[in-house]
Amino acid sequence: AEAAYGDHGGKLTDGEVALAGAFSGQVVGWHGGQVVVGFDLGEVQTVDRVEVCLEGGGYAAINWPSRAVLMTSAEESPPARLSGSGTLPGTFRWTPAGEVVIDRQRTPDAASGHLVFSPPEPIACRHLNLAFQANGWLMLAEVRIIAGETTLAAGRRYSAHPAPSAKPI
Image (cartoon, rainbow, N blue to C red; front, side, top):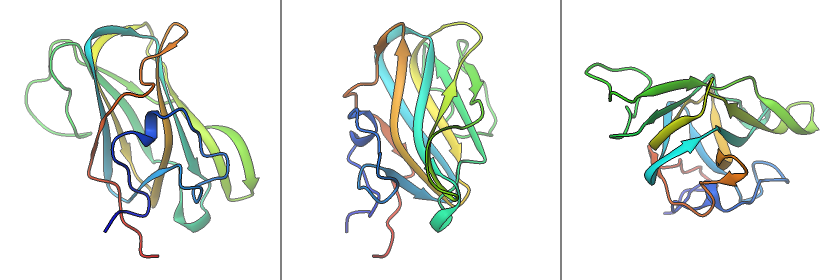
């Protein structure tokens, strides 16, 4: 069975933001735990910032993540977890998200917003992992990897671990 908030590796880079909220069919969702969305840009590129559009506010246990971090590397894929052991890639960089920016408040407990991951200086990287700690339901709508005025993520495939959650309907 397909996940209610499932994805085949293209919803988060299709340029469509869920204006109608989490139940619009435009979001990808996970219930609890740690979630990593990974990108391979194919070659080293300079990234100025990353933006993630998401849903939150508490309605139906759809919350902002309790933690969100961008992990990048020019050489090999960065860790796929927020904790672990072992040697990190030499070009590894870690950038926490800023506070959620509310874009649209539909009700007191349902909103669309975005997170911005702004490194202190542009990052030369090929691999990017966005790691989230879900706090109830994590609902992502779009990922933008920005270099100057260009969105490097547009139409790009990505991986998601674990796979998006199925919700009984």
